[in-house]
Image (cartoon, rainbow, N blue to C red; front, side, top):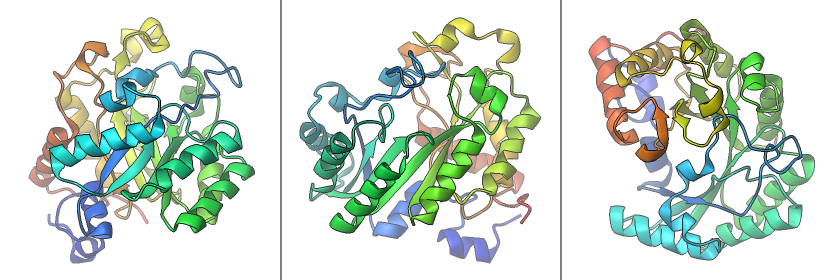
Amino acid sequence: MTVPPTIQALWGHSGPFNDYSRYIRKMYGKRIQKIGLDGGFSCPNRDGTLGHGGCSYCSVASFAPSYQRETPELREQIEKGISFFGSKYGTDSYLAYFQSYTSSHGQIHRLEQAYEIALGHPSILGLNLGTRPDCLEPAVVDLLDKLRSKWGKPITIEIGIESTLDRTLDRIGRGHSFADSCSAIEHLVSHSFDVNGHLILGLPGESRNELLAHAPRLNQLPLSGLKIHHLQVLKGTRLAREVSPRDFLGFSQEEYLDLLMDFIPRLRPNLVLERFINEAPVDQVITPRWGGVMNYAFGAKVVAGLEARGLYQGVWHES
């Protein structure tokens, strides 16, 4: 089964899913690299607003790049990120990605200062904010609207949905419901922001059928893109102390790949898929241990698996 011409035209290629790297290249006409930044923000699950200690699976150190850990100064993080990726990939244009903690949680003047520093850099073409659905009060949305107009650069918001099941969200200590995610996404889209979702596959207590059922629920939301991760149990997290082997799927690579072969075809074809795995440092991972496989290498396995089965994103999507 080949990808229909109408979907190939939508994606701009004949691959089996709507992948982010080609989407970005199509949008900007060249490779654009994300620079992960730490704006010094906190999280309502850590600073006492909702709780302490963070969500049960969260280890911020697992996704902080080396240049980010070396300095708290934002301008220096940007320059070090540009130096790192420029020498590695030869890129000269970037997206500033506020990834650590909750990047819309804090005093408005501090948020504005951090966003202005990033947007004001000549090599930064846009802003990506990783956040929670309950940290997007009107003042924050108004600020983002103002800065988008001022700088003429796109701002994309990545919402941590994590699961569409409220019992799971309660169990991992998210402090919000799936309905909260839906409301936040719809509100941002009503303000003409692109919104991407973040989903974790394999959270404790979710069966394979329940994991697959996330897809049609996400299809109903006005998301532009989706970032999918498998769950990793990391050292020092509450999940590492709480998880029971009998309710944690703990995929092998082959099992997770097989799940994606069922999951991706259920997603609507106009949803841009950014990635499929988490890349925590190997020495921080308790389970599942895959030996440090990188996202690009695993993505190649996804492509090969879908093509071998004659599947593609959207083939099982019900309009």
